[in-house]
Image 1 (tube, one colour):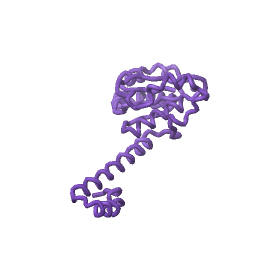
Image 2: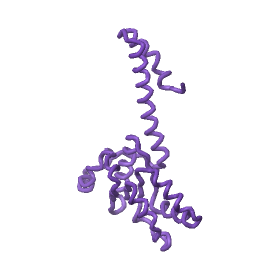
Image 3: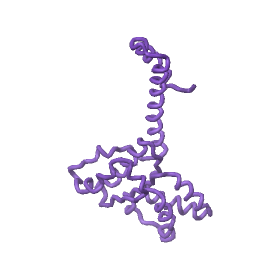
Image 4: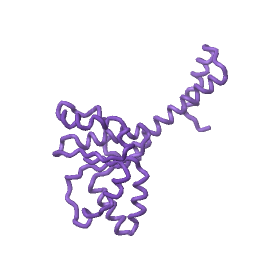
Length: 183
């Protein structure tokens, strides 16, 4: 069945089932619930790996004392429900202010809640979109990006872009369809 959590927990569950006089159905349900829970945890970790975060951070690790005002403004984004309305959110400030940390933490939370996320720096995004544009496959790239409910763009103000790359309107096209976090 390829159910590793079930295999590992079956013996312990069988002992509990005998001690508790469970029916066969109750035992089966308990084992399958364990497998489903394990798959959910693994799925979150797999989505985190696929998002390509440079460092996995949690919002809870953010130093609230240092940037309390910024945190108060984005407190509503603490749950992945902010993705559903497909609205953009930006965390802009000087280097070291915590925008990337907050954006990463929110995106990691979204991965753990079952959402697919794609993450990259602004320079990398512009490079990807410019390469897609030059190869006449911009529409394919936009379709691929449209499959992600959350797109994260960090280091927006850190690197200057070439004029042609900065004028690509693709970011506006896919940000209108998806939730975009910028930092």
